Each structure stands twice: as C-alpha cells, then as structure tokens.
Length: 505
Image (cartoon, rainbow, N blue to C red; front, side, top):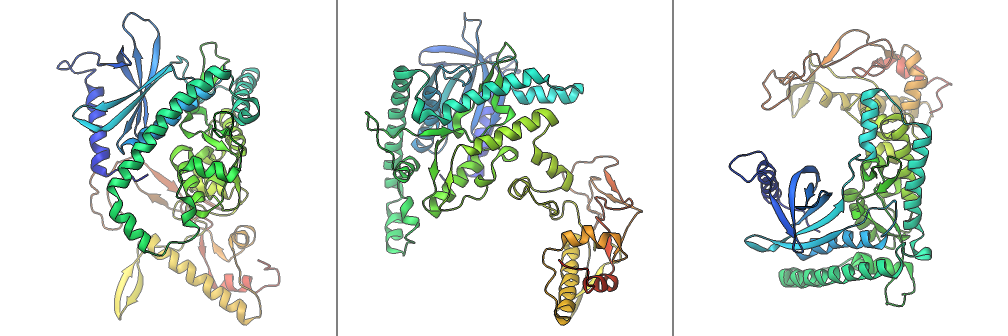
C-alpha cells in the first residue's frame, strides 16, 4: 500500500480538526451528528486518534448509552476500505467473548463531494474506566501499585481472550454459527472491495505493469503476487472448511496496556483494537512475504511491546502466537514497573527501542549512537583541524568524535596486528570492564552539557521554533555519566593495555 502525500495527510487532519473545533465554536452546531445505517448519533468528544483513524464518544438521541465510534479514513480507495472491513470481520469472529470487544454496527460512507474517498465507521462499546494504560498512569501519579489479586484476575481474562484467538482453528468461534455467519458477510463485503481495488489498480497501472514485465524480475519476488491471505493459505497448506474457506488460528500482534480496556466492574479486561489481527502460524516462504509481514508489524504493532521476530522477519521462519506471549510479558512488566522493559532500557541508554528489543540480551551496546556516549572525544573549542584537498577546515562536536574514535581503534588494531594479535573486535566489554579502571581513560568529572536553550551551541544562531527548557543539562560526574561516558581516551596508555597479555577481547 503506498503512503499518502503530506498534502493528503494534512488535508485529512484539517478536516477532522475543524470537526472537533465545531464542538466549542458558537458559529457551529454545539454537537455534530452523523447517521450509521439509519441511526443517528451525536458526537460528544474525541477519545483518541492514530494514523487515519479517530475514536469519538457518541450517543444516540433518546438513548443514555454511550458508545465509542471508530472512524477510519480510507484515502487509498477500495484497497484501504477492504483493510478496514477486515478489522470489522475480526470483531465478528470472536463475538460474543467476555474478554474480546465486539462491533455493534458498521457502515461505509462516501465523503461529501468525492465518491472516491471512503470512510468506514465502526460502532463499539464504551468503557468508562478506560484502559490498562490509564490505570498504570494513575498509579504513577499517585505512587500506587496494582493489588496483586486484581492484577492476576485482569491478566487471567486477557489470557482467556488470547486462548480464543490462538485456538480458533481447533475450537472455533465463541458464538458458533451465528458469529461465523456475521464474519462471512463482512468477509464478502471486504472481498468485493478487494475486487474493486484490483480493478482500480489494473486501470491505473497498465503501462507500469507492461514495463515491469519487460524487466528482469527476481524469481523470489514473483512469489508474492497474490494477496496476503492467499499467500498464507498456500504456505500453510491448510484444507478448506465446508464453505471453502481456510480457517487459521489468529495472533493479535499488538498486545499492550492501551489495548486492554477495563469493564465497569473493574475486574473484567476487554481486549480491543483488532486491526492488527493476523492468521497464525504464518510461514515466511519468501523474502517479499517477510518484508510484507515486517511492514505490517511496523504499522500495527507498538514498538515497546513488539516481539523481536517482527523487527527483522527472516525467510524460512514462522511467525506464530508466540509474538503475543512476548507482548503479554512486556505488558505485565509495565503494570508492575510503570513502563515496558524496553522503554525503561531505552531511557537509560538514550537508545533505540527496536534495537533494545532485538538485542535484548546485550549488556554493553550503546543503542542510541549519539544519545549517551560510551567514551567521548569531541570538542567545541578548540576545534579539530581537518584538511580537505589541502584546505584547513576546523570542525568539532559529535561530528568529529566518531572519526576520532574510529581512528584510535584503527591504530590500536594496527598495533595488535604488528604484535601478532587479532583485532579487538567489539570493544565495549573491554572499555567497561578493563579500561575504565585504568589510566587508559581520563575520567571527566567537571562541567556539563547544555541544551534546550533555543540556540545552536556551535554557531550561536537562534533556532526557529525550538523549545526552551530552563536548566536542561547533564552534569559530568565521577565514573560514567551521560555527558562524557567513561571519559576521554589516552591513546598511549590504551595502546599499552591493548597489547598486554590480559587483553583477550
């Protein structure tokens, strides 16, 4: 699926902003309304948003019940309509399950003045207590913790919801034939949208397809021409059911505190947001399919809770329900600590969430690169003097630090090669366990790193639109600190240490 242009994204954002502003401007009606399959609803307020979807709190006139209305804009025509309807189908598959949210109604509407742009509305139950993330936030503010028994009850309910998804192929739908009938109806609606999308693509891309056919195409890439569902069905080699449909089990793929609502009882969890639902197991039979699954995970799975195998999907592997177990463990950790394990680690190291999750067993790597240093070798004044084509070019800051450190380790390895020793390789264990306790590193204990003052620290120029945060700084201290890391390298002492008999890295 192609990405929308910035103009398209901005136009959709403006439209929804105007709609939201209409609630507080006297020149607009106090409460906008809309109709879903002949039933009128009044929009009370915005509950949340993400990507092309918005969730509103709505109420039907004469009915005191509050509902959550999910509005999904479909700017890519029938292709995105079909994708949105697959989410509706997912709600039908598991209805009625006490721990999985169900859709009350849905409709597909054309935008005013543009029949090509569609909007899918999904009417869902509204839960006043909010979600598990709201409860975590409240605990952090109030310096409180979940009662152990309540947390166990909540997670038992989530496990029951996942059991229904993970065992769908063998156990079937909780609602039996009725649920399957509803799901099939939505599936046919989505299939029709898929066919329309295919016709649209055929008409729009005929010339490009002809050119592609003339080009040399990698044999592996040609395997992914069918749609995702067809690829998975063929790869799994499942037998069709009585309706001629393949019946897999499912993985949610986006388990996180924000997707676990809490019913009014306070002890019944409701698993929601089934837009990430995917068949399981998913054999990765080609590189093209691997990239497709990886892209879907990037779009639908929240990074701090995403399983490592979804960050870098490998051909020849199988993505299955284990991804949910990983995410569930991260969710339990967040309930106990206040954040996912990789959010906590990323903040400690200034690093990348995806790398923290992927290399979760590594205790040395500074995942953030320029976030927090392992050692420091940069200077704002005086500058390093570099010479490019015979012309002196003073430089400093972190842009100079990386090549300086690279040069130091290149010279260290050169000295080791001359002594008949192998290269240092990954040097962080050596730095932290050995060099940090010797004179090879000069510990910087005075000074601070300044920032967030609204100016470029190298040029002094005012930065347009930059936030100003008073006293935003990191102080240098004894030992490792976020400003200078372990300190600055002393090359002579570092070389002696690298050539010593105790250096085995």
